[in-house]
Length: 353
Ligand code: FES
Image 1: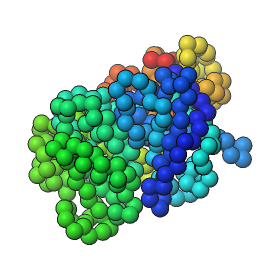
Image 2: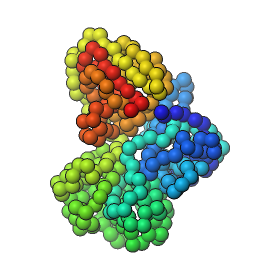
Image 3: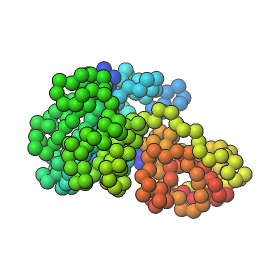
Image 4: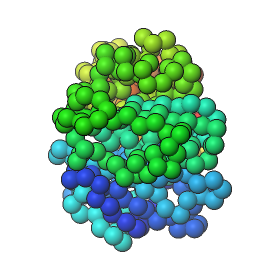
């Protein structure tokens, strides 16, 4: 069960003009709760002017073998007008305490032998840095190819950390950088990494059909383009893992609200306790549950982070949008509570499964 605790900021490192890395100290008694998989994220919570803001940031630090880590490092990039990222870049200081949810997320790679590859854009490097660093340090039979894109060298997050990885594992780590707004002296010509470009680039870089896992992370356009390129190259869906950081404009809710029954209830099980509550017209099932159980897990409320995932025990729902769950998860019966609306009069969700 996801929980919030207050963690102290142990370091604030400026990465670029518009991004920082925050290191959070985890006291010994909480370390097991914050034990994480490489690729997982933390949700940070802040109440400002009576309004609660939550944002999800990926952990960039590696996962050591054995003991749970004493610190966790996350990368934060400034989003224009972003309430939390502006606060993080301009106000958070050494020694501050932040409210931090225990780690979550299924965009993960536990260390295993094999060849792995990632296509990332902008701050999408953050979880992949943890994945690649952990993998190469702990699994001598693993190799990793990182294809990253950004606007310019100056805007690229974790340049030093990625260069270190290359120095430490010159034979097992391959790095390709594409800059969209800067001429490069060596390597790729400038321009965006879109589907067409990836479809010709990837087979020239590595044996696409021998890659055991692909990790795509960044803005929606890049991830969707890379996914289509890989599928066209014959890569099976089960080998492609995706995490989307930004969806520019959300498509309008799909199904008509008129499909909803006049009266409906949701029964939810959360942290071992259940309850049944009426769903108010137009609200998501997450909002119904939150009115009665403020401890229900969520972060983005936008169908992107997956924190509100729940198992649909009975009944039927429609989801407005889903950028977080893989098709295997929806086929297995999982839904995003923040995007779900009842189609049947009774719906039962289990947040503990
Ligand atoms: S809260 Fe992020 S997907 Fe529902």
